[in-house]
View (cartoon, rainbow, N blue to C red):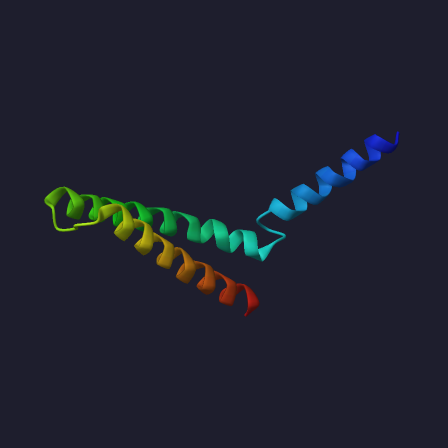
Length: 84
């Protein structure tokens, strides 16, 4: 009986957290998800072209560095939007 009540409570909490209508943060993440995934894909394709064309001398370090800096910038922007 105790575990049945815990299961109901946990299920309700998880549904409320991931419900787009009740949590404005989740709805913003869903809105930005398509844009972020598309832009990251285009960026990786562009970097792959540069590597393939021989315009980048150290491809692994450059790609990791660029993606890391962009990830930090995106995190700071999203965090700033959450606070405001």
